[in-house]
Image 1: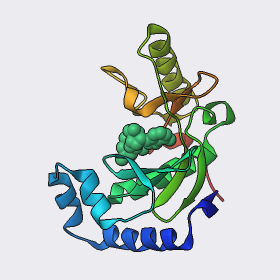
Image 2 (image 1 turned 45 degrees about the horizontal axis):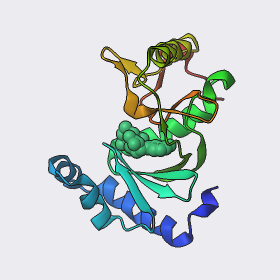
Image 3 (image 1 turned 60 degrees about the vertical axis):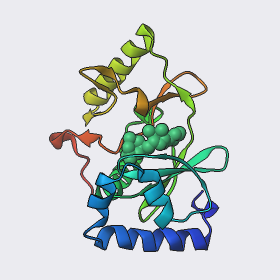
Image 4 (image 1 turned 135 degrees about the vertical axis):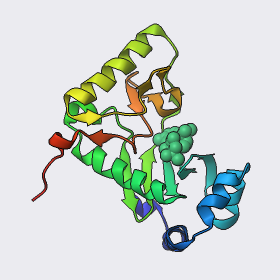
Length: 183
Ligand SMILES: Nc1ncnc2c1ncn2[C@@H]1O[C@H](COP(=O)(O)OP(=O)(O)O)[C@@H](O)[C@H]1O
Ligand SMILES: [Mg+2]
């Protein structure tokens, strides 16, 4: 799937990544901006329709079924990497609740696009809480599914089977003792 990105696009993202990593002023400039998306799009010129500028990643439409998430802060790099690793490492019954990662590279990931928002109904509120608990049982602290105020609707979507899908899981963490050991 990474081959949907042309060499030119990969080059643009590559030099952008260099800039984000090395600039000492960019992140404070971005923090102050009230037009974050414009600020990013002025600098990072990609031939895709901008979907939404998140806190740490700029998200573009790539074709009908995918989005491209490009890191716009140092934390954005970590979140992309965390999502890539978590998607691979999560146990099978839980992986299907994570936005499908279809490709990745330095500073970017491609994720399946999910348009259907999770309804604000009692049934789904319970399901979201149960999902957070299921991740915990598997040793994963699933921040950003539910907090004290309830489900984090921004991060939750439904797939075609009406299953909950988390689209922003860059902050999920393994409980220390459960971190899978790599040899
Ligand atoms: N897989 C996806 N499908 C559809 N929209 C998405 C997807 N991933 C992200 N988005 C949109 O882009 C926004 C920002 O993406 P997100 O991953 O939350 O970035 P950040 O880590 O910067 O918060 C989301 O709130 C959502 O509206
Ligand atoms: Mg987000």
